[in-house]
Image (tube, rainbow over all chains, first blue to last red; front, side):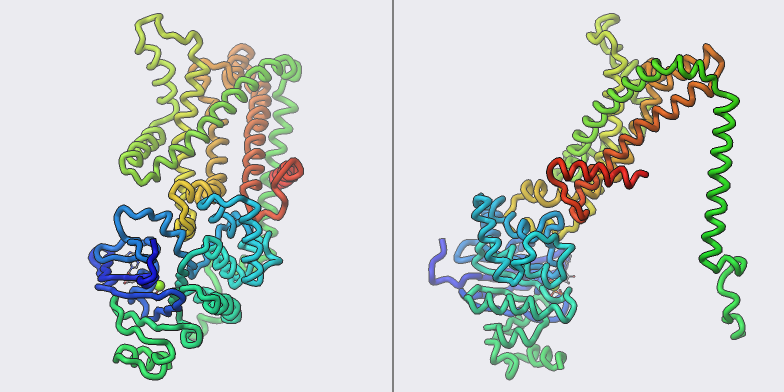
Length: 247
Length: 293
Ligand SMILES: Nc1ncnc2c1ncn2[C@@H]1O[C@H](COP(=O)(O)OP(=O)(O)OP(=O)(O)O)[C@@H](O)[C@H]1O
Ligand SMILES: [Mg+2]
């Protein structure tokens, strides 16, 4: 399976079309183990598509995507198995509304991995504790604030013990005062060494927690620079322009 | 011209209709008058038109018809809801063949009258055998159940399709992201939500199914309308048997809608009561009743 010489996530010459629209153009990208790769770029530049291809919610038309050396994009790949190794957190939480917080977290391990109920519950309780929601185990999603829901969603993804976590604008749907609690959980996760691909507009978080910044522009990777360098001296004109617009 | 925007001229109608309280009073007055006239009419019918001796003597015949109707309704209802759910899933199948066949089924059974379907089954099917060879002696009740079931499968299928369609795409994506197969995601995530979404429409359809049994009189099933027609033509007294017709249909339809509202409560995770066990069931019945009354 995974051999140490590979980056954990590899995109190689990936092209993705929606009909006639060329959305990912010859994307090549390597995300190392324990790297927090922050993906930024204007609306429509293909950030979400990049993430969604990583766990094959979208199919690509050419190129290859590998996870720990295993080709995710191969036609005969065991998608359900590969997806277990990739956690995804969505902008709109997508918690299962008919299940309590703890049931949301347990359903993946019990249903997909066949983990015994009691063991899954114990793990879910500890994950709820990690995201600061140990007292909300039996609440339904509609009884939780947006920030709480998103933290449950993160715990739900973590319960599968993924090798990499994908975050697609996970704070964009939140009231400003709830953004911090979600970013805190993500920061903890980064410190524990989780490999993360993070699409975000939170530049403070990108700068502080991100290891690398990947700037997307019109379906291409315009720049990929260490985070501490990007904000002070971006290498490309696109990077400079992006930062100029932020101000 | 700026006068046109002054306070007085806010709408088209008379000014007093701008006052919420007045509109509400008018509404109450109309509803009250309507209720009074209906009740008055009913009282007048019951006082002058109904023969109470006859009412008592025909009661057992209606009870018998009622029991037959309940039997037909229960069997057709269980069959049409379960098979209709499958048909609804076939309708949204990713296989174009399955999807198209299910669509054809739905189009046919919704597009032709139930009466036609009953005639095909009741008169048509036995003629496919040589005269006298049809193996089922009394074909009336089986034909009725088959007809009602086939017909209502189509409506339940549409309700289920709508229910699945109303589940957000993100739900399936979240489930698949966890590594669930399509079948697992449907069973554990999409269908429980789709079922809740579809229940009101399924309930409506099942109440229509109850009323559709009145058509069975044309294939000589001794159901409630048949008993009425019989008594009316012998006694030349419509109002007396109509009292029982009304009461017995209401009894079935209201039980049906009670059952539906219990199911709705149990499928509703945002309802604030516990749903498991006997306590939960009893409290659902209580709340179901409360909502009906
Ligand atoms: N399901 C789809 N069908 C057709 N086109 C799509 C689909 N999803 C995305 N696109 C198109 O692909 C392009 C990239 O979309 P994508 O969602 O990846 O951008 P994004 O960078 O995430 O933008 P945003 O910041 O607005 O979320 C856009 O032009 C979009 O219109
Ligand atoms: Mg996006």
